[in-house]
Length: 365
Image 1 (tube, one colour):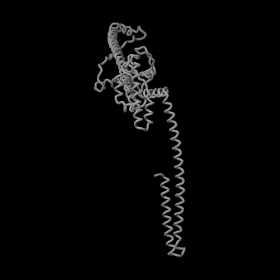
Image 2 (image 1 turned 135 degrees about the horizontal axis):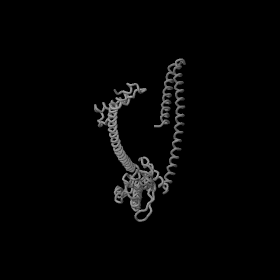
Image 3 (image 1 turned 90 degrees about the horizontal axis):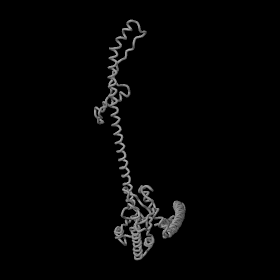
Image 4 (image 1 turned 45 degrees about the vertical axis):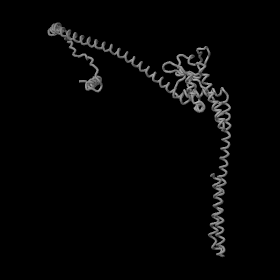
């Protein structure tokens, strides 16, 4: 029930209440000739009149707003109908349909996370094994180097006529025609032999239909259409199924990159380990040489003190020399040796680490 009908019902109810009230007033007037007793009734009638007038104004306002909204809806519907007709007319043109299919295909590829010229190439040219030039809409590269050829097709004429048909038999005929159009596209892609033009390539071609409704409507008339395409190495794919396929390809690429990076990290680690082993050998030999040098120095100082300084001190005792001969001191030091690595968390590891930190800070006793 709309607002106008509701207001009309309220108005009729108010008029009926007014008539009843007037009847009651008439009866009271016959019983009471005095006018003073009718004053409350007059006040009630005035209040009722004001109420009815307000309801009438509200009804008129609501009716005007409703008329304005209905006019806006009518204009929007007419504009939508005009735009839809223009879109349908444009899509009936072959190159417009092809461009729409290409745009849809690119959007699906971008949503899947693939990168142009890295994971896929648009409209590459090639020559099949029969010498004919081919140019698919898209070639996707797999992680193992193989390529998957994708070509977009838009079977639109039969589909739109099936949607617009009001008669059930006419719709069934248009749906059957739409299925035949899609079957024709399958035969055309199979005849182009795309996999032989791009090597190494997967042994099938993906026929991309830019709307799930296209394929669903065709399967109503011909349920075996998918198997028909598989038998000719043509895979029918809609945006949802192609997106799943391309996301799988993108995931395989990411895993391939991670595996390649892991191999590089392993190789760098092996080189670093070999160099650290060489450096540790040099440090060990240097420590041994330093220890031998200290030993030889202390032996030389002892021999010098026993053989030479004894005679030099006698000159000092006789007062011949102006100043005493300086006496070299022995060097008492221990060359630190490399200790085997301990597992993190062990007591030995914590002790060695604390000792090393104390030596670096100069607090070692």
